[in-house]
Image 1 (tube, helix red, strand yellow):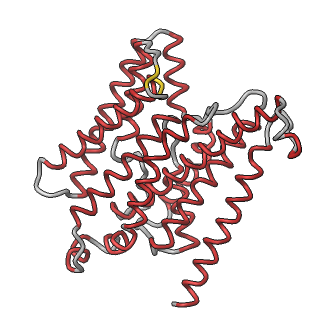
Image 2: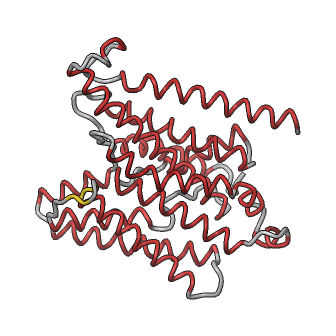
Image 3: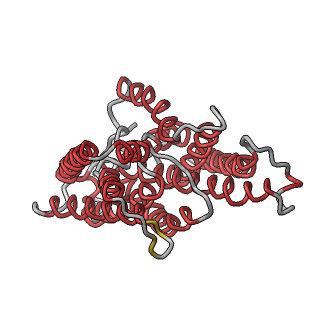
Length: 330
């Protein structure tokens, strides 16, 4: 046990070091070459470095960390490695809000938030409220009821998105499709600062509940017998992940598969213990999306591929591998 714990701590330390190196080097990649000696010069290259690349790298890291940690929590709560942060319909709620904003042509800003971001977050809030309300119609917070409510809300919102897209003109339809692809197009630090409070609070909650998640993976009856308040824990996980996912999707659009791939890859290396799996998932998710974003903006430069397309291209085969492999959580 001591050797196993030491191995896991060493693996997390190595991951932390790799993450730090990638965060330092990633802003230097791009079509405009910026040397280390130029970043404090006040030149155009320095402006690109600080206001576009650094902010974009930080946005990608925070978004990836939130999606990965949320995916880990959902996989534990539903005891299924195929669960994702979008399982309960929060992403489709945010997507519907953004779609409505584009369709109505609303262009305003409030407290530093764009109208599209505000509508997306409101849509995520509506999805959270509906799923929670439908689940509470039955006594307790049954995992199965919550899952079915999430799927129903998600499908309903998807149909509304399709309806609005059909009713839109060509320009609006293109904007909706582009937003639904998911992308990190941060200019300045507004996006990362908007996400950071929700991601920080949600991450702390999930890290705090790592022991409870360990027990819940073994089954609801076992968790209850060991003194875990299952309903309260499930509600805390649901609210924490929903707020994180809502903030990320409202800022970056629905970037898929990160929340499924990253925690599962960490689980293969770290194991099932959420005391170590949670920080590993947080670091690796951020690292993974940062690397994917670097690929998306350099592969066909000066144009760029939406990062959601890159993660989907990687996630599709990974999903099939998971589906054909183990059917349980580990």
